[in-house]
Image 1 (cartoon, rainbow, N blue to C red):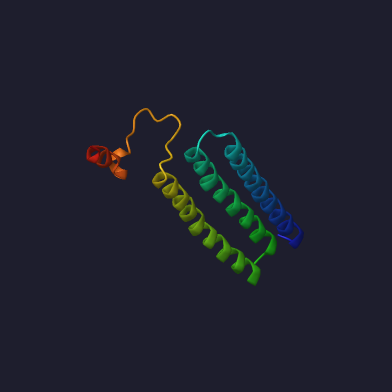
Image 2: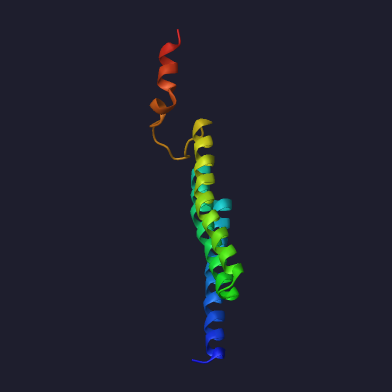
Length: 124
């Protein structure tokens, strides 16, 4: 295999990773705009955008080859892989504590968790 073929394969692989990553981020952005409540939006932002950003970083790693920059991109990818779900969980927990419930919740299944039933029993 010659160097031109390897460079072409690397360009195709990185272009594919960029394209798929951008599609995932675009889908997540539409989810943030179109979905009805905080819980659905958290799902769109937390999962889809993490995958999209990871794929874009993988595309950058393909472009840089085996250099020190690839190691830095891998560390950024690891940091993003850990912190993005953690931030999503923190936002979901804050929404839950604030009393925000899903739009189509049929009955309050979370009353005992927040102590709402205890507060209602203590009322005179």
